[in-house]
Image (cartoon, rainbow, N blue to C red; front, top):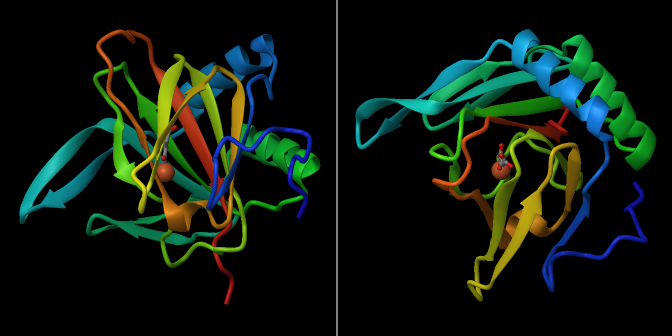
Length: 199
Ligand SMILES: O=C(O)CCC(=O)C(=O)O
Ligand SMILES: [Fe+2]
């Protein structure tokens, strides 16, 4: 699979991350934001922390080309079939990157009071040789990488209509997070297209 070779690697070592700030032009990105907002079966996540059930503010959804199961924080989701918009976006990703993504995790952040803590996308079900493609619509938000060993932090911005590609071995060495911020009052939708291992 080809990397987008003419872009600068955002990570100084132990990984590869590339950003296309305007993967979708403004008008198409607006249209996708609205379509996804309406079309996707958004649900609040249930997480169990120290034995206590919590409902997250952030809304999520899990889609795929097969009913793949996905487990995190003690809850298992079964993928819904790719919607029209997700198929369109997935096809464009395949045209531009050569990768066939078979699943997509979606997050809807109502405003800057919602974010995502430090983690890496290294679940066992994912094919570790394949990149993860992160597409963002809506509010401009900061996104951080942090190296597991050196703790070095790399700060980037994820624009409306942007694509962030994270290639192996990024997930092994770098955590990422979406920091909360009081400045952002608008919603944002993020899609991470992934490749689930086939047995
Ligand atoms: O919203 C984002 O940009 C990050 C989402 C993310 O890291 C994830 O879904 O694993
Ligand atoms: Fe992630």
